[in-house]
Image (cartoon, helix red, strand yellow):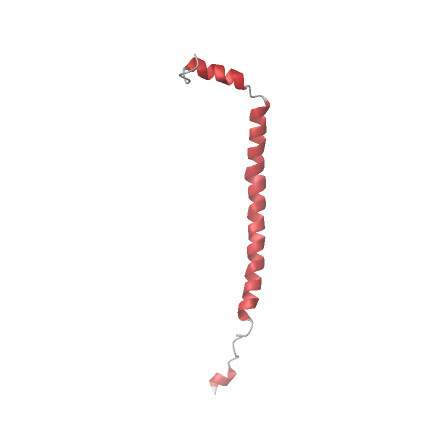
Length: 75
């Protein structure tokens, strides 16, 4: 008689319901990670490259490397 008191488990549509829930969660987490990477890593990296190349003199750098003996063909 105790088995009649138990409720039947939901079987129809269970997979679709759980997939909908997990898909929304996965999309939100992936968007959060993408945004944090963009603003935490990519923007800082772009700023660092821009700061480096703002005052970069390739001829001066070449002359320093040539004097240091890095290049064998240029003396």
